[in-house]
Amino acid sequence: LPEAAMGQELRELSYYNRMLATLASGKMRVNAISKEVGKPKDIVVPYMNTLMSIGVVKKENPVTEKTNRKKTRYSIISTYDLFWYKYIVPNMHLYYKGDYETLINEYIKPNIMEFEQAVFISMCREYLLHENGKPNLPFTISEIGNWWENDEEKKTTDGFDLVAIGETDGDDAMMFARCYYEEEPVGIATLKELIELTKHVKDKSNSFYLIFSKSGFQENTKTVAATIKNIMLISLDELCAN
Image 1 (cartoon, rainbow, N blue to C red):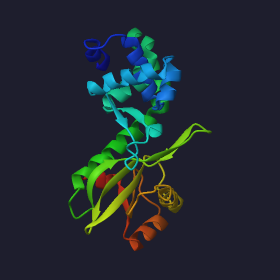
Image 2 (cartoon, rainbow, N blue to C red):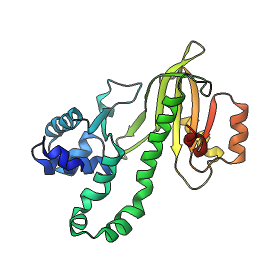
Image 3 (cartoon, rainbow, N blue to C red):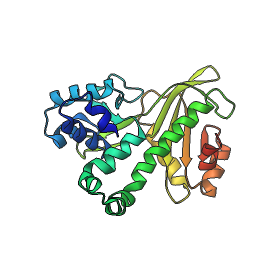
């Protein structure tokens, strides 16, 4: 278990568990973590640094804004650890009682799509790295991460699932991707939203737009992508073939 391994190296394990459960719930910024665990920001950051040092957590900034501290966020690296802290740790009383039926049916199954979405994004990232430098991609990747913007007033975040920096035909290029783990095929409105959001990125050079979809694409989306060379639609079958 993740916490058993950490228990050998970390003091105040309960605080670390709370911080990791907070990250797993989607609160990834220092202010949100601080509020959730009841620790000041200048205490939270050293805790995060310790978790980073043992390879449990990573610190992220938008790939084009690496020095923008206002956008710094943290995330759990391993999807196994993410599952544990998202579903098990907050319901440890059920786990210790052995009441797995309640744990699964009331706390895991109703929210499992959130976890599966995170796993799907990881699959999309691995696909891009695997295909990097091959004919399937019209660009080469030198760095992969993501980009997002925060709405401080609404306390919301909007962005991409993946952003890569690289080259195409010797010129600078950027790739913007969203990964949809939905039951319905992706429509043209979704593609338009992706392209519109890229206008918020200041440094984007030649742009490529990628949509990964678990359930495929509507015909109008395929038609548009077929006529515009910098749009790529990638299905689950294509992901699993690599």
